[in-house]
Length: 166
Image (cartoon, rainbow, N blue to C red; front, top):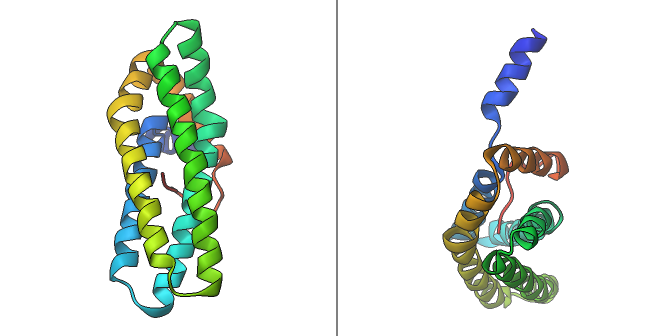
């Protein structure tokens, strides 16, 4: 029985890039739901999007980016270093938007415009990561390391979220 559980867990394992890409897709899906929702559902989805984006950014910064940066520095991969640093700046800008949206959520209905602006930033960020950084990371990191990072992501991810976002 224990062997079967172990084998089932191994089959479900995903590498870091797959998990992060799935997070990006979930953020977009939540936003699409927000755009068509009404009433309290919109407020709930907006709050969820903000929480998911914060958690995803923390995971990337704590688990994924440090490994990519360390290996890129060792191998003199300046482009990878530049992309990680740009991604971290995007996260900083996103956090400022998140604070604005959260503040607006608490005080009035004008949060949609700010959430739209935030999601435009997130869209550009995820496109850059998926088209530029992820392929470089795939070449830089072995499959085993990407799987280990994926395991680390699952360990630090909050229990109530099987996937997060941007």
